[in-house]
Image 1: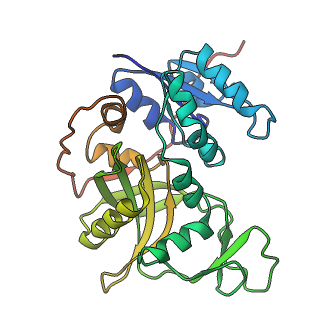
Image 2: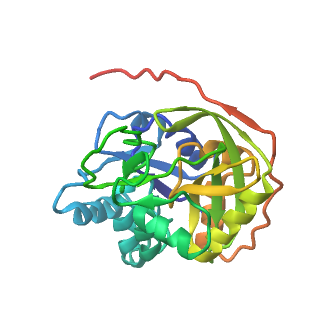
Image 3: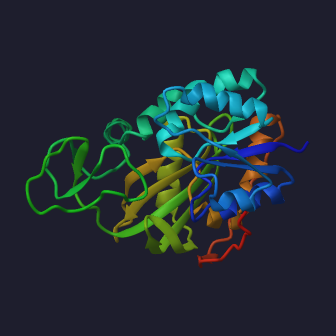
Length: 301
């Protein structure tokens, strides 16, 4: 069955791999963005203009857009609307629209870095010490993503909307994770971040890391994720793993996770739309990703 699959934030520099994956899975890619001339509009099969996240009638308008555009499946990726999608996933299901996202209580925990810290501590998952006051050198937004707003101020600052964290030591890893509809992790793909630009991985390599895989397995069992999630962690020389962030959504660098396993769009459809038993494929450890800019030329009216 061919589905119309909607992606958010289709002006992102890394949206291309996701649109391509939808198309290669045999489905129709419906890009969406608040910018009518975003690049995703020209890469996808169809496009819908989204209202601003601050629109007082945001969800009423989104519901109307989905129905009018005959969208069958939604893959949320915009941090600011994740909780809204989760809170309405059962409403959309009644309209025949599947939203690939975890339950609201899970999303609420992991879009809030302070609640994430508390969850990790309560479940004995190592993580840097964190505080709502300036107890530690690193400062980051309580709600944020992609490394935006993370810095070491070196002097006292106002901590409204911020938290402080001790600096993690060791090598940085990003872990692409796919959980089925029953929150079982089918794939846990650690990748070493070789190069990062604007919070996005531009070079990386898939590595086998036993301690990371065991830790992420425990995290998934405790949290109850559904679909793709992204875990950022550090591994020290003593093979100790410390989680610094959990993103309960698909991520820009997951192109490498897809390439090292299989097309996760097909996997999502199999897990959330049918009772098909999925047999994970071997992970291609050692696979490396390098990104480059590409140009798209379109005529103007």
